[in-house]
Length: 235
Ligand code: UDP
Image 1 (cartoon, rainbow, N blue to C red):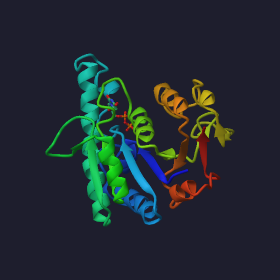
Image 2 (image 1 turned 135 degrees about the vertical axis):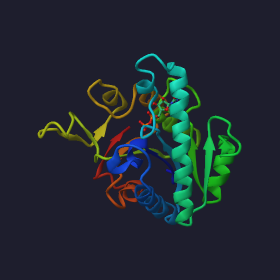
Image 3 (image 1 turned 180 degrees about the vertical axis):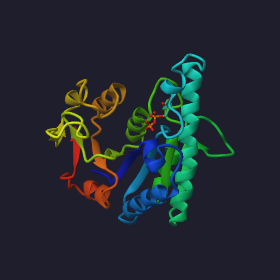
Image 4 (image 1 turned 120 degrees about the horizontal axis):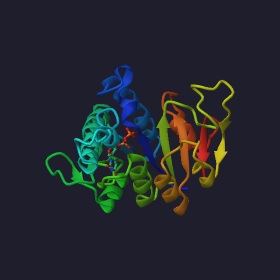
């Protein structure tokens, strides 16, 4: 196992109590967690969603905005989050590079996998934004794709819950946490790990997906070091 990982944060994770926008204190917390990884010699790629700003499906719901345009708006939202994340990482003294799947030279580098790997070799954190660059995909799929391309040993989906449950733990007191799932388990309708496209891609490429609580300090490092007691793993 090499020590290169891809961590996926949802856009909502950045929003804090407000439910929208970017809470810089949360960014600062995430930057600390990422610094903990880099300080321990781990190469880190990051994908961030855009749900704290806009989601394509929601924006297109009443038919005024076309789905394709709404999805491009969603991809742009991930770039906004990426710029913020790059700042927060640099504020912690880390070296970071933002890449985008859609060309916007003044703001970020274009996504070039060889360049990304060179950055990792120089201990830089690479943030992959604008999703896959295509409408009708999610940032979970983008994270799976980038993790595969950079040859990450695992994809960690950093969430607000500490793993995957057989039913919604917020609604059902008897929900049971599933420690290990197969990719086929994760494709079951009631298990919400990631969308089917992301799971299918991970399955094809044998990429382990770990679902973990981002609010538990030090958890990311523990997981990468092989302690899977506080998460769920799809493999
Ligand atoms: N999106 C897209 N193609 C991609 C990734 C994202 O069109 O490859 C758009 C899509 O509209 C999505 C939005 O960007 O709703 C924000 O991403 P996502 O919903 O995955 O963010 P998250 O839920 O993780 O915050």
